[in-house]
Length: 229
Image (cartoon, rainbow, N blue to C red; front, side, top):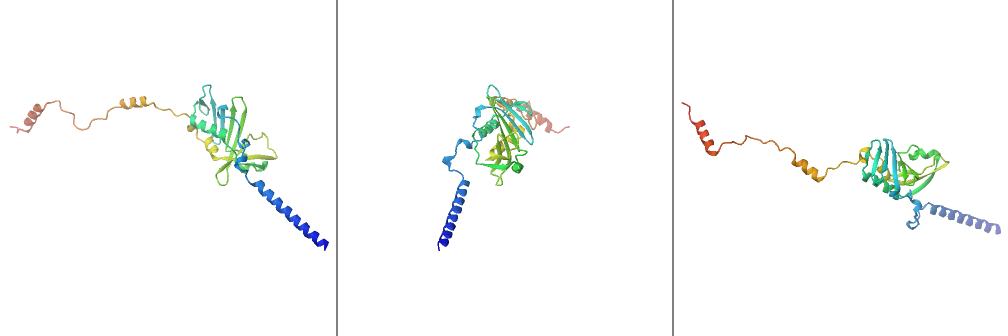
């Protein structure tokens, strides 16, 4: 009788432990409440104004950008010239404010499956104090809503690598064609008005105006209409 009671007790205790362990595991998989999100979820901790240099490498080539002493951005490669401020500011804002929705620790041999063995884009960032950061951007997630990325990846592969999920805006911001990084010349309103006023007048159609007055024109018409003897 005592043995049977002990067996039932052990079964109930084992069941409780299993259920409790399963609940704990399930809760660990849930994302933290919004109130628990901290600055640790930010990709980087620098400010936009801290950045003085950017080097973006994609499968189409390399673009190097540098901020001069006046605060203007210039293109160093592939062609020298002024940069399109809007494109640069958009990227800087994303780098300074983006957060990762989730991080994963994956075996290093699987890194290529996320498009990070040979990244879709690599962004090298230089700050005013000469601190450097690097961002690898890989493939889109299965639902196409996020992108796999690595923040300041190690120089050599570790046994496990940390990857994060970031907004697709980052991918779109760095995979622009070169023409969109270049500042486009604008024509001032005064110059545009001058060009319009200096444009040649359209050629007149029909017969040129007669230099004869009305009376002379009438006499000429009478002579032309009179019969010839």
